[in-house]
Amino acid sequence: MKIPFTKILTPNQIKDWDAYTLEAEQIESIYLMERAAQEFAYWLNALNILPSSRQLLVVCGTGNNGGDGFALARILHSWKIDVQVIHCQTSDSWSADCAINRARLQELDIPLKDLRPEDKFPNLEDYEVMIDALFGVGLNRPIEGYWAAWIEYLNQQSFKKVALDIPSGLFAHETSTGAIIKANHTGSFQVPKLAFFLPENQNYVGDWELVEIGLSPNFLPTITSPYYVVSKNHVFHLLKERNKYAHKGTFGHALLVAGSYGKIGAAVLAAKAILKIGAGLVTVQVPKCGYTILQIAFPEAMVVTDEHEEYFTKVTTLQAFKTIGIGPGLGTTLATAEGLKDLLEQTTQPLVLDADALNLLAQHKDWLTKLPKGSILTPHPKEFERLLEQLATI
Image (tube, rainbow, N blue to C red; front, side):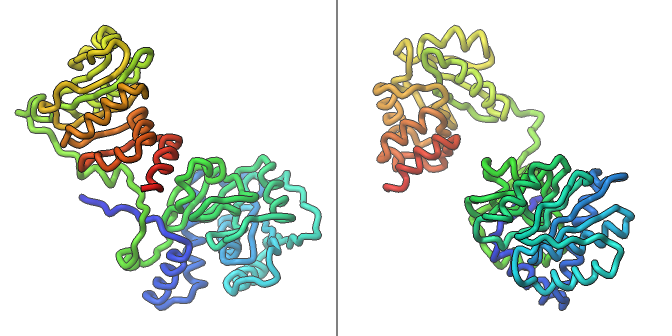
């Protein structure tokens, strides 16, 4: 079954989705907040980190994220969890639903402490788990001053930290600055946030999972997003069962151009990957110094050699191959650059360009227009940065 890709939404789109759901179900926002808190509680329970003997702390803010936290505290209290709440007065006013859920909490025997910028930080040694419900996806400025110091104080504690929807201080859809909660776990409502996929945010997000809160599925087809999440479930339908009468010629012949003196190992690793992923035949072109190494390290591959002893200069034949990969360990000599240019001008097969092939493209921006249709570029962050500098000038 084909599963649609998960869209990554902006904070404004998430807000619109909430509003769409309220209208579609004819409910008030406080009921949606209650549902979100209930589903988060179920998810939290499945993590198996709820304390059995020590206390759990919920740190709430003054917005809707804080309202979620108050509702969650009530639910956990009903499960006989020893819950305490700190309400951080980050603003002079509270959201309407935050105020409602605080009032509901105060009707129960749940310890509640207000924390204001003039207050000394409380001792937190008795807590085993902390739920971060301080700031949500609506945050649009760095956290500074007293509340930044408070977040750093929370980060210093030994308890498990679980972020409700998003770690406080982390911008959902752009680069973050300022203090940010370092969560061990994050339960993201309905969809992931773009920030979760940025490597610099790994220490803040921790292990994240989606928490379905019942937002209307009819909303997503009405909006667009340039960002999608692709998982194993999304690509399973693309895998085709192999015919029992198929043979190696059925699955295509790939050419790999890789390696230079001292870097033949890159050619070995890439060749193994090509065969592993499903190519029927693999031919590897290496400089003459790599012939013996490759034949011994990976005898499954066919090997042809460049006319040069130490680096790539040109591809001698292209007709036999369905697709071509070039770049791993290739080097960036002038002769290698000319060989890549010649390949780009000759081939009509799709290319996979990696490593030094991308570095050479970054040095010769006009070659980007020569890429055959269906080509794939696989840069790591630094290679991507070099390429972007050139793409911006085209």
